[in-house]
Length: 86
Image (cartoon, rainbow, N blue to C red; front, side):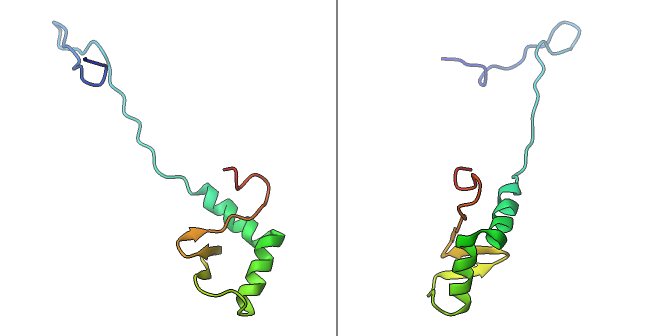
């Protein structure tokens, strides 16, 4: 079954295309990571984990990198506003 993605635009007699194709190029947005960094610096649960990490109470795979708390390859998201929902 043909759909809009498999159809080609037909040229008219004057050489102009009947339908115009638009491409939208988007890039990744890192605003969420910026919000997580801000919350990591201010939220009580994140500050507690940072203190435990500094005191040596948290073992590998916990680490602080680039302003974010990481557990292995996962990012810890503090319970701040609706960050966990996002």
